[in-house]
Image 1 (cartoon, helix red, strand yellow):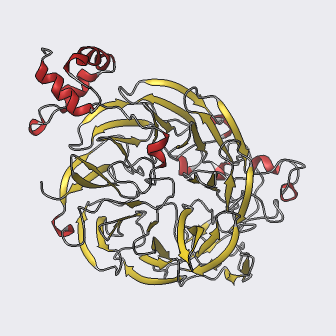
Image 2: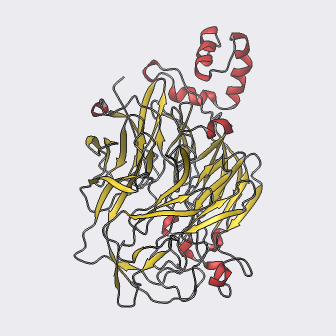
Image 3: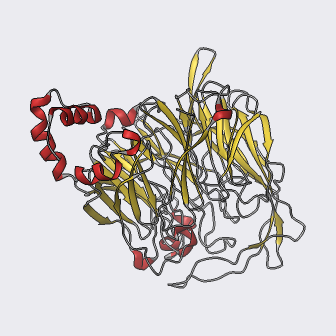
Length: 567
């Protein structure tokens, strides 16, 4: 390939960083060193388009931007967890014309749970322990990092599921199924460093996308039902050096340790297997924790079992705990609290209220003051809720006395919760919080079981009653008014695990219970468009823009689907 002024101008157009033709020779050599030729060969020539270069090039300032627009910089879009896009080219007036733009099949997973990240026209996706960089306009692969899946994992939640990457400067970060943190070169996919941040031999795993805050990469673990001790850890983004670790199960002599007699704290669960959120003005990181172990039987863990089923507010520089709020003390129902803690600002009589909103698996939607963790409100958002009669003035559940038994107890919500890890969203234009809710109940069984290394740590489990009917609903909840505004009932059997996205175009996109990506009007819930993927959803949609074209993307089954208006 000859190096000409024309090709130099092409490079200038792609990168937007070369000042003139004279500087292109050196730049071209650098790009050769970062496998530009591979990217060129795989993407040039598609409808006459010039190639893209797989470089993240994103700093702390861009990560702080909110709401997201052209870029989708982290799992939830921005640090707030709102999954709100400022893009409005696709709107309620034209969404009916949305059509498939491209489909990417990574080939090594039948159940993708990833939300893609897009930086300057490059999309990063994960599937099991593999990572891909794609041309976000066409879905063509620019590079592929592959790593074998791990054997011997006990926790089904960590069965080779990856929810995405974090990005910083020219690096892409991902967690592996056996709890390694990898740093990849965004230009080539080459492995820069690999840190084992938990012990696979103790059956730790990982399913989350890392969260990059300042110059730290923050990671959590799965494996709560494998008898591990949960934690959250931060690593230097440049070197991979451990900066701090916060244990979610207190050790002997620490606050909350009374719930964990003997060595039970070493197996207490409380894992951190979903990404958190971050408020840079309050300098506070918000992260949620899973259920206590063993599940369904609490005799070996008396008391509240801190810090399980909690939201934790931490200093991101030190890992120091600022405050905590526990949604389900002494959890016996597998009501982990790993649902997204969404940061919402609401104007109230001229005062901005800084809130944290979470639709919890236990069936209540909570509103907290995120400055101090003060409980403000809890509203039931499903009808089938019998484990508690309500929530008291401090936010503590008023128990109904229903607990798992040897014979089986009928308890609502059921084992999958009133909602789960799939993402909610919040639209500041409508003031509405959107969440996929599930009406379902189960028979919960209890049978004490000691911790045995190499075995899952359950106190038995649940069954679906033969006459039980599950119903999924897209719910819109007014944060300022504290009440549901509309519900959009789903057709299906309650099997979808698709989440939501809302946009400035007045839309809510979500994975429905019939295998479709669907769009409804954000203010009313009026159905506007759907596309049947033919596969069950286990992921949440996102949106981005390249070259003036807005796209909406969702993972469904084993494929990544991208949609746009005709252009």
